[in-house]
Length: 155
Image 1 (tube, rainbow, N blue to C red):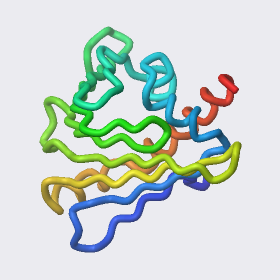
Image 2 (tube, helix red, strand yellow; image 1 turned 45 degrees about the vertical axis):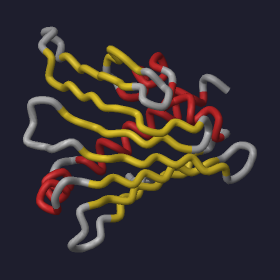
Image 3 (cartoon, rainbow, N blue to C red; image 1 turned 180 degrees about the horizontal axis):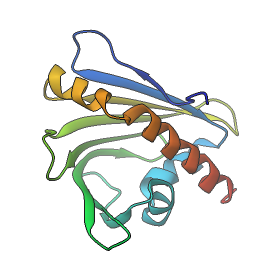
């Protein structure tokens, strides 16, 4: 299966550039990142908090079938421009990964298509490479496929 979400990791840089085109109006794609009920559907995680505004914060939590928490993440939103961009930190709790900085840019292509550009900066090249060693690309692609499917139902 083709990965529609593209990840570019330049040699010797502690960053990733991620791009994905969606068959969605840019406003709907932005909502998928800004509204808790939509985020829960496509990410498959519980949104404990999502303050979609400048200086807002968020907390996500995922549990297994037995109810044990297996993933927790949180961050602070530093910039929030509707339908254009979100700048935020992202921290996975109880992992060796340091907080990362994420720049999400939402680009309108046509009335019904758009592009998401994500620039992630890691504390070190080693941490970036650790992330890439995980099934990160496949997981992100699957999440974006779910996002497309979930938001298609909102059209």
